[in-house]
Figure (cartoon, rainbow, N blue to C red):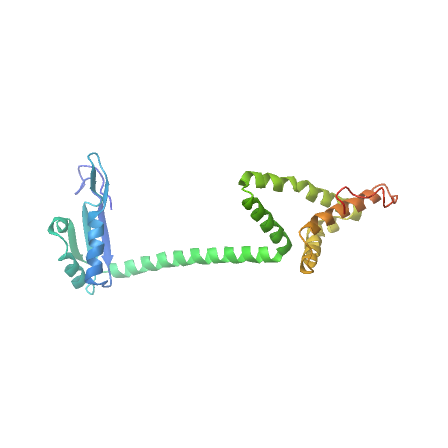
Length: 234
């Protein structure tokens, strides 16, 4: 607690540490905590000064003997800034309620993180073909010492192939519903090929084959196999 730096304040510009003890922790542990609070320092105008000008312990009847026993073991030079008091009447339920709120907040944070990790893992498993290709690319880039920016640029250069594939779907199907379903259909085909042992290059070859097929049909006339041969060797 930081007292306001005004003349009307009882302890102007002082910083106090207030600890509410509801259950006993043991004399040795309590003394160690007290010593830690009283010996902490902070930068000051001339060297360093104590972080807390005063340390106050508010104790329940069950914890009061242990806290007093711990206070009796610390050096007198530190004990002058220590004060052990009884917990005010009616304060225990309020403190317990506040502690429960803190525990609930931490529990919600952990549940949120667990859900996030679970959803991420499920998406990675569902998109296993893409996950494997991405992991292989990241691992290879790391082994070659690529900086992250170079890997992002390389990934961006693959975006035109995806755009070309979607364009192929528009040309060949001429159906909005089919185009909207194309990513799902492509995912199912990639998953099927991956389960049969297809390598990472299968996806790019499939895109190239689709582009060649669309080029053959773009003017409504079939082309010869020799003239439609793609430059990727598919």
